[in-house]
Length: 149
Image 1 (tube, rainbow, N blue to C red):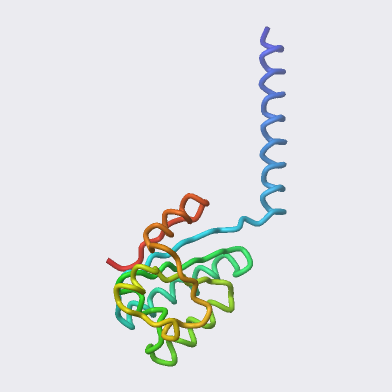
Image 2: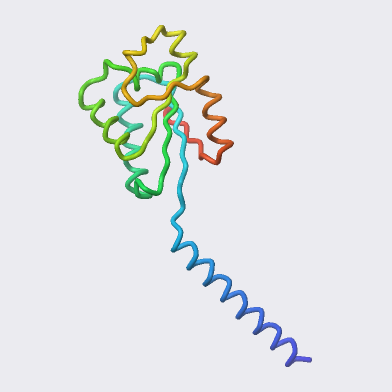
């Protein structure tokens, strides 16, 4: 009986080791595509620079090819993606966009704040409802990050 239990235990251990090794090899061969949605509903150049720093750091940490980042701006956050920011901030937005980040702007905010199409930065996508877009992305597997307070 002891020999049978020993043999079963040994077999289980070997099977578990083989499974873990296979899983580790599979994970190493297939990088994870991280999907992240950042919600921005505040204003202020310093805070926008913090947002862009978080995006840059995330792209560096995972590799820009392994991360999908969407920034959803609504309310006071609309100022992030409209013209009027200083040149350095606009260049940072262009750089993270070139590295794959996407920026969305709420159509309700556009209407409420009377934002003209030509005032919106190039490449920004208009979405129906900022919060609704955050929900849609979360339902598609994006991890939700609320920046600021």
